[in-house]
Length: 317
Image 1 (cartoon, rainbow, N blue to C red):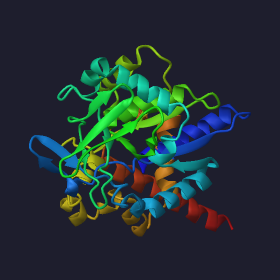
Image 2: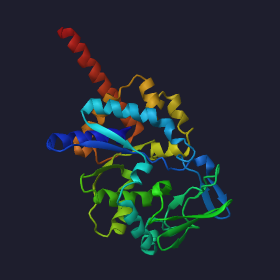
Image 3: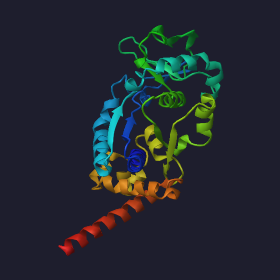
Image 4: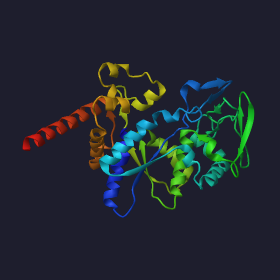
């Protein structure tokens, strides 16, 4: 919620200072992320099935839509939602992919130091299978053709020159690199990326800047990490273990763990937006991290201030 709220706060600022430009928030959903319970090993190779293949990516759509509608109304900025299929239909993608594959000996060790492979995946097309090599370890390359291996049904391939690219999946480092190149080649729009700070620093240098070799890159705003008491990133821990943070539930702080519980607890997205907008208006608050307890305290302060303002307004009437 904080990442999306930050995107709208940045967009509002850009809209204010560039009145002649159309400013819009684009939420790019990673519906090709793995569904953890399906991860399995065949020999030494890890295989998985994606949220998209299992049609689980739509389960949170209504939450995203509600969040976006409320933020758009709060700050007067329009938005759109894109899935990976939409991004994979970009006219520049084919050329970019062919270049990445041609430079795989150079790029792969930067993006995947452990395996030194490109994280290109393609779910097995056999009905009711959908397995994909997580790290692209068994992928074979023949010019612009990639041959994939299913441990159950054998090989299948795609032609990057003429094939349908919308079924491809990429791991996080490769996806980030491809997006940067797509944004840089957009002839119409100037892109500003909003990312969590776990993608900053050495990660950005190693995974994006080196492979781009000085190419034009979009501006990136890194948002504060929201951490637990130990310094672990809350959203990542929840992704890995959905049952994590039982102690927060026992402390009545579970409303900070997901959108539905946030709303059910009586909070409005506008309250969270005010907190995040403060980061943009006072940048020293943006370039740091927060524990979930600090977020809780600041939300309560804003909420109490709103209530006091409401009381004063009623008195004046």
